[in-house]
Length: 79
Image (tube, rainbow, N blue to C red; front, side, top):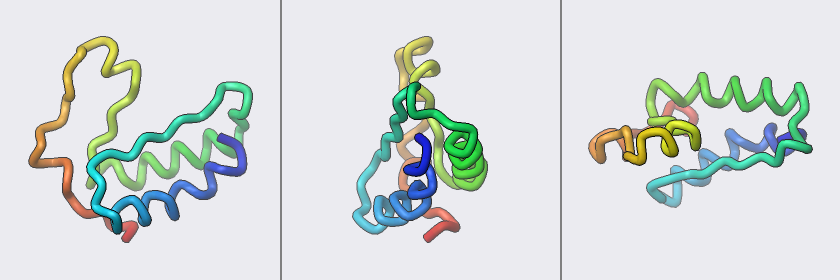
């Protein structure tokens, strides 16, 4: 999640245009850089108010989807 973190907004906008339900962001621990972590943090802070964010650790603890279907297809200000 180094340089590729700079592509998150663009990928998210493309994801919204294709109207797919879920977007998965995965980063390999060896590729995590300060820049990548800051870019990921910024991206999450920008979209979390309009789109549900679910982490892997949350899913493994609860085993449930914490977000109702009605919140899944909201549009973002990043479009």
